[in-house]
Image (cartoon, rainbow, N blue to C red; front, side, top):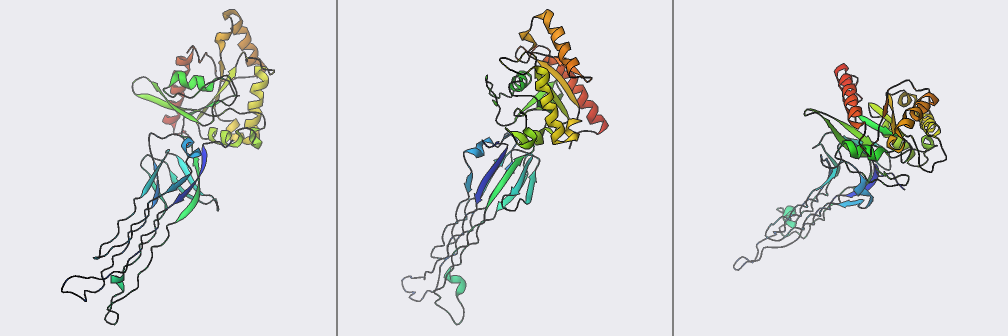
Length: 344
């Protein structure tokens, strides 16, 4: 299955309308001369970054986009109507490539950014245009030109401060649901998340950050297994990674330590810079353990991983410990912003 954060689409601009060859015929004016109008230009296709669009998921089902054809010219020197331009809404942060050449043709970062990707065809000329002193009754006219068409690859650059890292069913979707208004689907099977979900976490009245729920990784992701490379590529654009671990995986043959080490190995295989990015350990689903067992169980995981960084124990489902985690993240991001170390 294609990872829908990258989408291939076909865009076709409208053809120009044809010119026409007509002659003025009115009572008492038998030799009125040519009056064929020009056609209208074809509509062009634009991409426009739109604030309320945050994934490329819809392009899975709608990949062909056509602008309107120009209207043909008419008699009495009436010009055909121009074809309507087509504006395709895409998420801010989308990179646009020509599929055949892989040439980058645009980068729509901010809401409202617009990119012309297929120019409409030029209109055809009516026979009035061909009238001259030696050709008073021209029969010539021209057809409109075809509009441009091309196949584009869209790649969404997930713009987020925090990326959630973990095996399938580690609880990433549950966490983003509990701390933001984003509502990703959750279920008891792997790869619930098929495309990134961005959630805005508000901490107090005036502070917020963006958290990204990225599809789960499996062993071999650095070589493209599962959702593979796209997963790792988008994590590299965040400022902080939260490594979620299911402290008591249901019906799993792997221990939490084995699952966590697989993730860490994939990070090192993909990119050492990504592996060295600030990363916090989040021990999730502690509500499954008895209170007296939780401390000892979590301690064993931390020691087994030789973990020396920040550790948080939460239950995303019960919202236990999540508020403390969000405030700590906000403090971390504020420090980065103040120091100018924020990820571009």
